Length: 304
Image 1 (cartoon, one colour):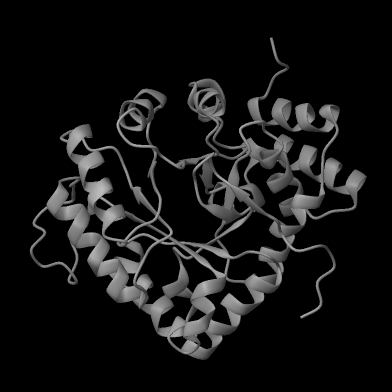
Image 2 (image 1 turned 30 degrees about the vertical axis):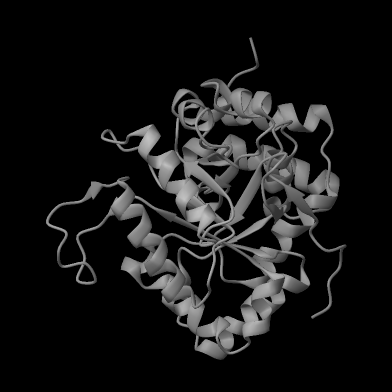
């Protein structure tokens, strides 16, 4: 494949955190792309060509099937494991045929569940370690001390190299971070979901020198739908895209990555063209005027 830009760079998410690609390939919908194992392997290879070497998973994706699909592809070329970083998440229990023991959708951040989830993920992904494990969502019954002790045991066993959380508030993150060094907080953010800008999530992570990971950076595709409510935002994005000569996807990813907390956005597409547009954002810096034009369109008003 011919790339039209430099490969996506790698960055550390914190002083002691893992080195991940600046843009991360999200595997949530891998099962929906109907790819044969060899085609899945080809997608991984093409991501690597773009410098996207980090692949985001969760045990529940595809009703507990996606990690197995990825592992099946990786098994076709085992040496590729040394060139990529695998991220997974645990802590959500789905009611699923794959987990008949689950009677209700719930959260479980007990030591037993986290440890069992890691072993399942390692088996499905056909690897002997995870580069990064995240608690998927805050659990009302979570015990910060128990989680920290479980993380330490998994690290000492060589099963997981780094740890973080997902969808945690600033306070929840800092409570666990005081007990065990966290590498990231994966949160939802896009021009359609601005809460982390204003609820201290990004401020707190910047203060801790921890880079967030960003899920749904394109608003789950809503940025491209003909919705009258988001028409001003689409207009603003189109204007900046025309000024920069870049696709709207590239502009959105660049807008996110320009934040000083250094977010790592996650792609959600199986199309390599869309993934390449996201990777190209690492080379684009918006002017301050362009950045605030997008924010104004996103909020519907000027800053105070």
